[in-house]
Length: 418
Image (cartoon, rainbow, N blue to C red; front, side, top):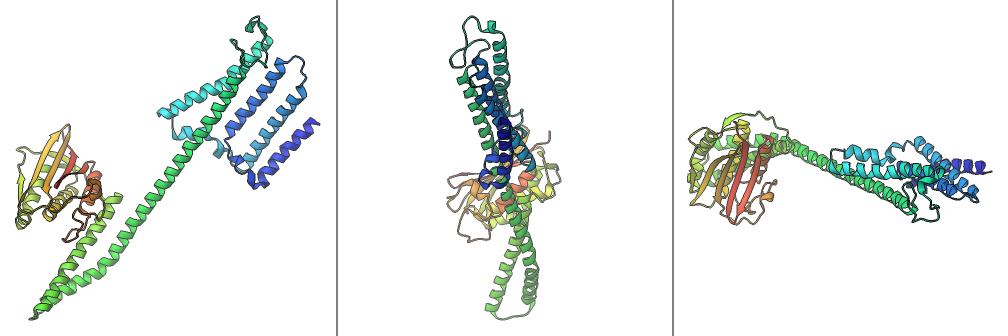
């Protein structure tokens, strides 16, 4: 009769797992925890029978053991059938993400090993040895109904149940950590996909705009060559020429920002003299500094300062910083440039006093389409520092912005050639 009842439980468990929607959450429970708890129930029933010579409750304990074993077997087959067994083994997935080389992985492995060792090996073996060799416990009798009794191989039900509770808590802490990792990976993948979509959109739109813009620029250039005595028409043509050229620059910057932000830029690292590049770019901006009434102050190093960088990318970065100074620095002030060497790194800094209040954080200034003046009254588009930061990082360097009051400082750090 007991066998028939247990087999009925077995088939009922398998049938319910397939037909009952309300039990789907139950089948997400950690499978290894269920097996360990089933073993603990079997051991507790066996321990109770060992501790009571009358065996008056043997049928009840046997029924519990039968039911637990059959239910565990049915649950196992149901998960194998539904192909959910591997996904409900939390601990292998946990140690795959957090290996023993990581502190949390090592700590969890030590605690889990200790709990399982006590629940499944030390306590059961100690109980069996004490049952068949009473001298191990000494002269004092030991029974199951004395939960506070202790002996070298004795059994304490409170500690045993607490260990099982600790195992369950650890398992669901492990599941919680895995769920957080999964949510983080999902959010990270969505962010990467969104960023890639925006970059592709910018690239495609820029290419689509460039074709008609080229025609506009060419026709404006042809109109400029036609003789005209109308001053108003000449003024309008000049505005068209100026704005179309600005739009052309903006589209180019958009493409550069998209490539730099996604890392889709070829980087050819070489040994480059930083002092020579700074001197050449400063010479090109000499007229711009004069027009904006700025005094450029730079004392070049007597010896070469070799750095590891891509020449064309580094030129673009430094050019963006110099251009930023000519657009936003206060007239009749000095722009200071300097090069320092320390611990295998070379740092280039450019400092200027802003003509507008810098009511913005350094982090915001390196975002796309963000500018310090907020007025958009000049030719800036808010992409220069964003492009510069990404290009420096692609070359293995660091780019930073420091603001102190109205003092603006751009810092580029590159690896030094030893």
